[in-house]
Amino acid sequence: MRFRLCLLTILMALTACHHLDDQRIPPAPVRLQFYTVAEWTTYGVVGAMSHRRYIKEQRVPSNFPYTALSQTGFGGLLIVGDILGAPRAYDLACPVECKADVRIVVDEETLNAFCPKCGSIYSIFSNYGQPLSGPAAELGYGLQKYYVGAGSQGEYMIVTR
Image (cartoon, rainbow, N blue to C red; front, side):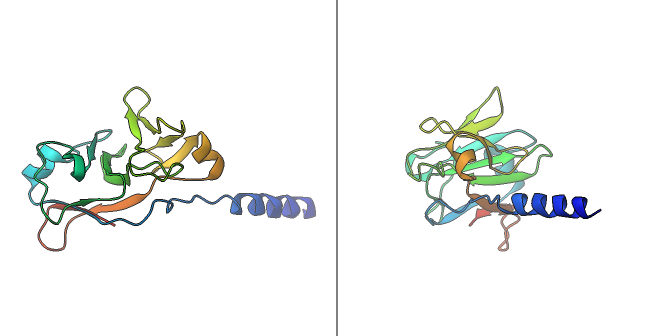
C-alpha cells in the first residue's frame, strides 16, 4: 500500500509540472461580428471540421464585410468548427515564432494546423490548439484561444479576446 501511495505521489508531481502556455502571442484587439444567421452561414464556419481565416489588413476573406470596429488579433484569426461543430477561434500567429506574419496553416489531409517556419503541428479540431509535435510541443506552447459566442448587443455570433 505504501508503495502505491509513493508511486501515485510521483505520478501526480510529474503531471503537475506539465504546463501549456497559450498566452505567448502579444495582446492585440479581437472583434469580429456576425450580425445574422445568414451572415454566419456565409462567412463563418458551419459544421464540424470546417475552418476559415480572417486577416483584416489583407482583406481575407476578400468579400467579408469588415467594419471600422473589426479587429483580427495579432496574426489574424482562424475560426474552426470542432469535431462536434462548436465554433472555436485561435490567433493565426505561431506561438513559437511570435511574429504577426508567421501564420499557421491548416493541412487539409491531416486536419491539423502547422507552422511553415518552425514545423510545429497543432490540434485545432479536437484538442483546442494544443501542440502535437515540433518546438511548440517541446516548449509547451499552444495556440492563443479567443471567445466565440452569441453577442451581447444583438450580434448572432462574435469573436472577442
